[in-house]
Length: 493
Image (tube, rainbow, N blue to C red; front, side):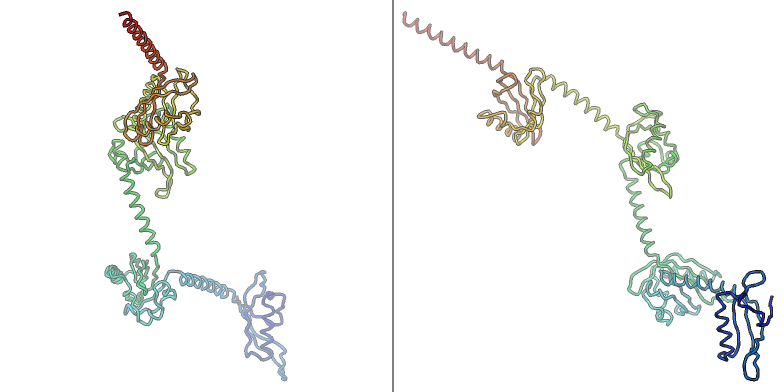
């Protein structure tokens, strides 16, 4: 509501303290004759206690000397107008900030007339950063925007643009297409265009923006390529691979189908617990072990463990499972790599049995067994715990034959080792050596274990050698007695 008062009833106490100086200065300037009219906008305190904006207009009443003795005028409440102006200023400020944001970014705004593709009415300043052309090159008609469209995309884009215009659309989001920059580099853009029409529906202008999305396109292509590589590896992997969510199979590769004996339609969506017997090989309940193994990978780590699975036909097989959590379609799922180790388990079992048999055979052999390398060093040793000839392994392993043999025996031992390695033939030799039982005679057989090592089986033959010596001595004594008797008979005759 407008209120009209005289200047005399206005007190400084009702004028907003931020406006007092301005009011006095404007009034003083008018009274001095520096301005022809008096008009002032400021805030005064309303009877409600709130401040209102007012527009004060006035005229100075002067005496015959020209001295002002009174002001007469009116005051109008302009609070609503001021609020509207503030709102407009805020909107303009926001629009200016948005415009600056566009200009500094990779979003180019354009306005094109309906008469021609070269009739570019407006284009934002950042067009030079995005396309390499200046604003003037576009607005002058020197550069036609459509001429920058990649030849492979031009026909389709023009068809879509004309269809949108002819179909009476007000807005169109074009499929992504390519533009050729001034420096001949190719960029991908997103194009969003509004079609401005007059009251008769005729096109006046095209207003829109383009965004350089080259980085996004490259990222998408990289992601697609990575996904293609992953699914190639996924399906060509020699191990079964499962993706599992809440114990249900989300996806699997060809190997998994073959391993478990299902077709894919039967397999996808199946509960994982259906693929295992109730108990694992160690007797632990399958459901309990499952919970424990899933808990172990919640920290983001991966775990490898043994698991007993069940095929469609009910048969079971041993497997080695590598379990981890991965991101799939925006959520965490189990990623399981399953390797059938049935054959490996059987090989390990057979190997263990073979090792046991070998151990029993070796224990039945009354020989000392050594492994010597090409450098004549002992690298392994199996003592004979029956005959009393054994010494601690530390006294043998790592030492050279030079520390146990000397003279002709050392030379012969080395020769036999070299010959066994080079000719891959069994070598034999006899030698006398100190032992825990004193000096003993040994018979050794040497055979190549591989290209670098020789296995030596040494047997105590002391008793045989001593017996041979005794026989030889007895034979010598017999020969001497026969010779003596023969000489005696010759003399008597």
